[in-house]
Structures are given as structure tokens and as C-alpha cells.
Image 1 (tube, each protein chain N blue to C red):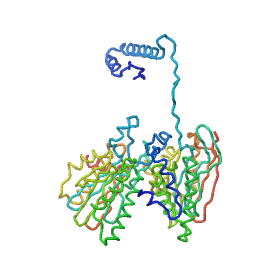
Image 2: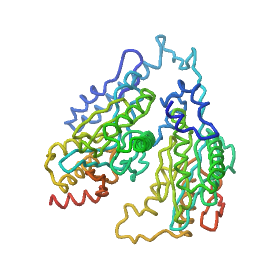
Image 3: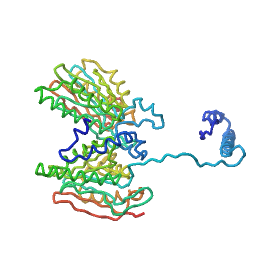
Image 4: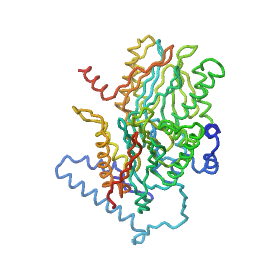
Length: 279
Length: 269
């Protein structure tokens, strides 16, 4: 119950606590609250008016420091799920900045190899540069080693690329989805400075905190009792991803417009585009 | 610096150009980076320090949001950790591996910044292997911990956050060192690191004896981490237990804290 102090006076919360302690009488309640409210109103009017009774101006006049920020937040949500013999990487296609939408058709999934797709959300400038660097390193590896990089190797490499900028990070949340050497689905999730681990499913980006608990329940069967834990089929996984993004578009302003799903199997990578709310 | 020389790839060098001019302005003080709380989401085992406090208070050590512990006893070293990683108040993962297997007879634990710990300990694994190849014998725990301490000391003050315990078995028997990004390197018989460490210390101190059996020591480590996850909001997930003995380390168990809770509850009744 403290009001912002202007100079000397401050409304101490212990004073009000004192008063509320004499609440032994039933009528005492209302009387106390009235007294407290009146005192607060007097304080507010005393602060708002200057010495001559007119309202004080509240704008600040003086030097103001403006700072250049090398980062911007462009929104977007990315999600990846690993199955027995498939992997899904899905992202919305909205590119925003502040209150504006720059583009409704800017997907955040980038195909790296025939078996790996990366989803990057955060600052779009860093997403573009990072994917360029990864693609260049993939080519270099292919030329020196005469084979494509596996998903696990790409994940380990990305970790060191991100950590190389430990003191001026790439502002990107990455999730890699693909097939491992044995043909099973693999998902690797990263933080902006390169810490990573292999998961079964992960959501990243602006609506991640909304999506992750739903995935925990539906794919991880967390907090469910007496439920049969069937492995996830490809059709069910795709339907789940669509449902989950529709929900995210309802409640996150940065997610919407369209959903792009990349389905990775040993036959190759297939894409599906689903419209989402455009508001 | 060590970091750029390690990470330089053979032909392309995308990294160095940016480090110099921005090194002062954009040190990892989040406020300087200009977008406020957004990059606080760097995956962390750490509890964020109070930003409103003035700069001098930043030098006070803040706790790492995790619980890891290790202790020596007659049959080796027990290492027990939780598995929660937080980004601010969001739980980013409940299945993080906080014990890093440096080589078959050396383990390192993680507390603090996840990327810092995993990167530097991976680098330590590389250095240990190089030592083995050069000297035709295994590296001692004291030397391994010293390598790690010296590596991170070069970055002291730049915002690295790492609190680790290097555990192993060498010619001198079981070895346990605590190393952190402030430059501390301490040898000891018992350490608990992280925001839940106080709770873990209470449990281990009351039950620790040199002549415990393997079973009892494992139970003690497990119980200590469980109690810490019970009371510390930033610790949780699963309890991973390892034991280091004369032939190397072995993974003893991985148990979900909820299962442990039900087990201890039924024992109480």
C-alpha cells in the first residue's frame, strides 16, 4: 500500500497495518477503510498540485539518452516433434516488429540437408545470418569429408557457432528436427548461446510457454494417470501440431497468418501449409 | 583469446570481427544489450540477480539455480544432481544432463549458465585427451581441475557463470575439486553447489560417514537432492546419481522426483 513518494512523505504500509489491527469491532472494518481512503486521496491531491494549487506538469524536460539497440524482436513460434521414423518441424509465417506486421509470408523453417530442418525465431537479421553461416559450414564439411552432416553433427556444430558469440549473442532460438543415423526422429533444442540437448518435442519462440505444457501433456503424457502410452503416429502428430498452433494464434499476438509444417521421413521432406488467424 | 582460437574454422572466419568493437558495450550485462528482459531467456541454471540494485551489488556472488552435490567416502565419490533448467521463471527443461562425462574416469557437474558449463567442460575433455596423448598417462584430477580453472580465469569479470565440481579417481585415490568462474578452485571431501545447496548440505552433513556402504551412500546422495528439490523452486526434475570408483565412473540411477516423493511418503507411514 505504498504510494510513490515525492520528496519527503511516504505512506508506510506499517501505519495501515496498525489501523487494520483494531478490527475487533464489526463496524470498525468500514470506518478503518474509510479513514485509509480519505488519507490516500489527500496524499494524491497533495502530490499532484504544486504550491499554488494548479496541477503540476508531468513531462520531463532535460537531456534524454537514446541508445542504439543492435537487436529487434521479430516474433514467431517454432515447434518440432520427433517420432519413431519421422520428424516434424513447424513454424508460423508472421514477421512482426513492435505493433506492425512486416510480412505474412516469412516462414521460419530452413531446410539444411535431406534429413534435417532448422527452425529459427527471434531476431530475423540474426536468423538469416546464422542460417547462411550454417549452410556455408555444411558445404565445407561436404567438400572435405565427402558426405553430408548428420543431424547430431549439425547440432554440435551449431552449439559451437552460437558459443563463439558468447559476448554478443545471436538473438535466435533454434530447434533442429531431423532423422538420426538409425532413421529415428531427433529434435535438438538450443538457447541463444549454444546450450543444447536432444528432446522428443520442443516449442520455441514467442508462444513457446503456451505450447510446451500442452505438448508435455499430449506427447509426454505428463500428469496423466492410468493412460496407455501409445507411440505417436505421423497423422496424429500433424493434427496435434495444427491444433496447437491454432490455439497459439488465438492468444499470442506475434503468432498467426499461416502455419508451415515440414515433415521429414526417409523418403524426403514434405511441406504442408495451413492458414491461421490473420488478426 | 582461447575462445576464438578454438572456434576458428579452417577457412572462414565469421566470428572475430564483431568481438572487438562491441566487447565493451555489449558485455553480457542484459541492460546494455538494449532489449530489456528479452535475452534473459538464455538457458540458465542461474537465478537472476536483482537488476534494480546498483552496480556494486552485482559483484556479490549470486546463487546458481540448481542443486548438485558430491562427496568422498571409502568406496569412491558419489555425484548427485537434479535436472531442471530455467530461463527466468520459465522451466525450460526438466531433463537436462548436469553431469558431464569428461572421460571414463572423470566427471564434471554443471551449475550456472548451461552453455558456459557444457562448452568449457567439453573443452576440458579435449585438453585431457591431449594430455593423455602427450604424456602417455591419464591426467590427475588436480591437473584437470587446474586446467579448467585457468581457462575460465582468463574470462573473469566478463560475465561467465559456471560452478562445477571435477570428480575422479587417480593415483592418489578419489579426487574432488570445486571450480567456478570467479576463479575459485578448492579441494574437499564434500561440496554442494547451487541454490538448493543449503538444503542438500543439511541432509548430507547429518548422514555422512567415511565408512558408509555403497548402498547407503547412494541413498544419502539421492535423499539430499530430493530434499533440495522439495524446498528449492529452481531445482527439480530427476535425480541423476553417479559413482566414481577405482575403475572409473558408473551411472547408478535416474529417478523422477515425484516417484521418490511417493516412495519416501510411504516409508514414513
